[in-house]
Image (tube, rainbow, N blue to C red; front, side, top):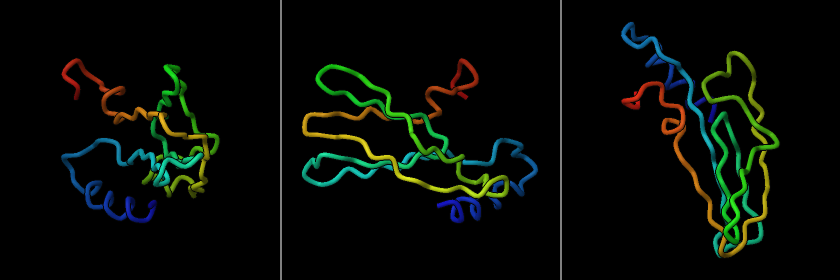
Length: 108
């Protein structure tokens, strides 16, 4: 993932108009077909998902977080999987970090 994102960010970073941040946060989830007893995630600088189980909401922070993708020149990311219980009836709530990290009242 890091190599792919870094290659594509090089094209954006070369523009003079865009002085923004050149990285991508990501959260990759693997939920087994059939609602198995566990799911797995890899977090690269992204806010954690919320697990809703029996009307209780729990934040699922990564025990092995990696830096955002595209920062490979600063550190060699090691992507490790976090495993958590995920049973039938559970619900995951995810949102883009653009929603919770907006920098202006207009959402920009």
